[in-house]
Image 1 (tube, rainbow, N blue to C red):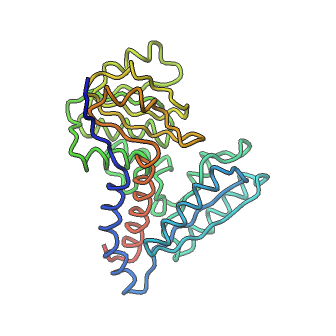
Image 2: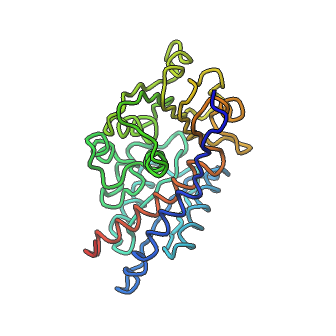
Length: 283
């Protein structure tokens, strides 16, 4: 058992990312360009509204422009796609983020795939996922990109390690599995139908929890010395990992909050600046 695990402080990682962005934002501003992120919120889910507000505040602090589009929960797939296409055509908008999840009657995949590739700063399109899998995505999904950024910041080795990802969503579990594989980890992707899940987790050098269930990962699932990355965020500021139980076992672990979350937002800001530079030819 490890008595002094590294607490993987997402605020520190996010601060470094944003510090590097500041001169790039200033350079764009000197050329009359303000990077702009448009967020679309369908319905009135309070958690989603909070996330959108946080992203808008992050833009403001960094000197980015943010546009918030609120659509009623009765919005149809066609109406949502029309709103996305209008943003695609707006040259002042550099990034588009459709807040997930959308109401159940909407074809979310069709809506995601309506986002122009050069504005898909959250890495949600089918083509963007394919580029992530092949290792050359300009804008990989932000939470997987945040997880990889944390591992890099703390110089935690990935190559040759066994990584177990719990979750297979197209914007988190699947892309982070691909990104770990592209950095030479041996990856096992587990999910709700996995039999004997604890035994898989016990074999992991790196555990990524992305299931959306509070305190799901137990302390006795963690191999001594494993690195634990909690990508979950549940009501009450609770992650997918039982933090107190896993802490003594891990060599490094992300807290919730102040772990993966701040870095996810920082990666979204970075991708928006990247997109603005590409659109203006200043990169």
